[in-house]
Amino acid sequence: MTTIPTLSRNDTFAMADVISSLCQKSAEKVREWRRRSRSRRDLMALSNRDLWDIRLTRADAKQEASKPFWQG
Image 1 (cartoon, helix red, strand yellow):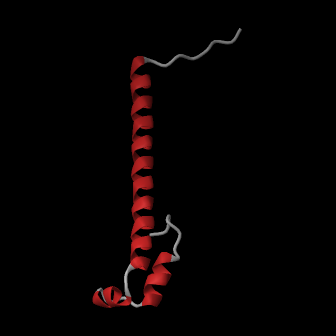
Image 2 (cartoon, helix red, strand yellow):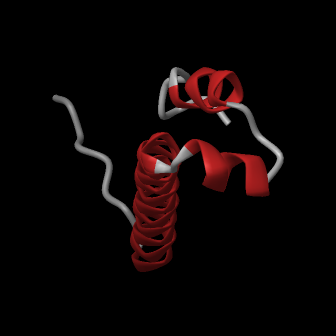
Image 3 (cartoon, helix red, strand yellow):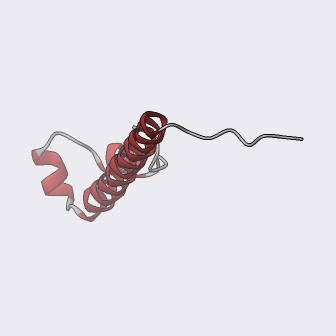
């Protein structure tokens, strides 16, 4: 006969904390990715004059914008 292991109340709370932490970290990462994507899109929308003001060339902007969203 096989017995099914049960979790104690403390184990259950610990597991819930781990899951909560993973969800929070995942949400933070997704927000970071969205911010990068939005920033790179906005960078490409700048005029050459605006880019010059922040000391970037169009080539610099294209290089940054071509990076995948997950790459910092």
